[in-house]
Amino acid sequence: MHLGLILPSSNTVMEEELSRYVIVHSTRIALRTVDEASLKNMNTEVERAVQLLTDCNPAVIVYGCTSGSFIENIKKSFAAATVPVVTTSEAVVNALHALHVETVSVGTPYIDAITQKEKAFLESHGFTVPDIRGLNLTSNTEIGEQETAYDLAKSLKRADAIFISCTNFGTFDVIQKLEDELGIPVVSSNSASLWGALTGSGGKVKVKTKSISGLGRLLEELP
Image 1 (tube, rainbow, N blue to C red):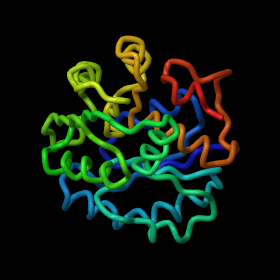
Image 2: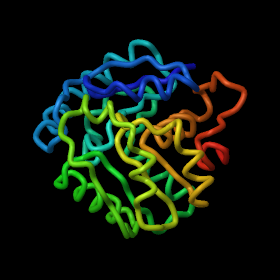
Image 3: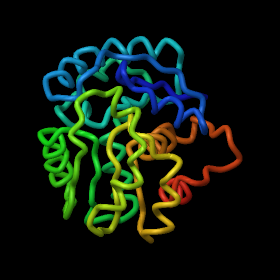
Image 4: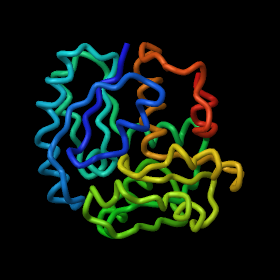
């Protein structure tokens, strides 16, 4: 079975990365600028997106926006879902706990206001955040054009793990290299979303490849 994906209209990265491993059927909701008002406005479309995706009978639905899913509680928007719904921010928290992480350093493409809200979100779930740095970008299409995830992750202070935030931030080609060089787990929004979909569907989402390699120990240690 396949994965149903809700993602921002301006996201150009997440579908391509997830589609390397699973079949993805997506619907988009409006977002151009990554700021609090725009994210909350986008979230008003989530309920309708869930209803639309349910029509194609996915095994699981992923709300693929990190900041959109931590900026406010949107669980009521999933009430009509007939299958499990996983949000990226929820998947990140669960993935870090599965890796027994206590301290996590974070790289984001966001403006400082959103970056600091993410820090508070992670701390509210029991993590210590010794370092968090953002690129101060508001245009989501500009975020999608960035090839700086590797350098940003390398610049962070050491912790139990590194988290690279934003589903529009390309990471699948650098996660394994970072883990090999840093010697600690590296999790991205998209790797956590993939992990969350596979675990949240009870194994109903099938991987297209023989195995998942190159995405670090989170996916290597998949139950």
